[in-house]
Length: 136
Image (cartoon, rainbow, N blue to C red):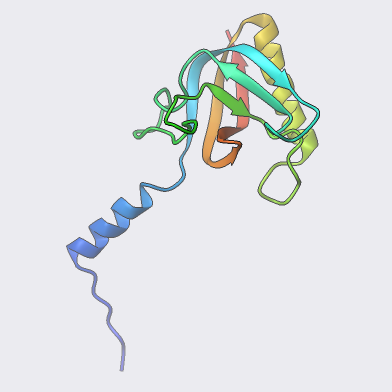
């Protein structure tokens, strides 16, 4: 005898709605880097970049990224996690450092960037950037 599982419209809609509130990875396109930060500890992941626009509302995603600071203030900083522990959640420090070097290059050349931001991985409330593309 075969077991038949039926899904009604309410359960399918519930599944779709519930998955949309989870992590988003989206691109911030056309931003400029206005400041870079390097720290010797892992408080901010060791290396960060300040974008010229709010991360939460500037993404290519159809919904806003959850990159708000405590109290609801908008955030323009992204971390590259250069000093984050290598636990499988964060990239190897060499990969993170290379990504941050591209951010420094964009800052020095005042070039525009496309930054991939992941709101499921944060360090001290700042969203993680896994990739950066520099262009004019």
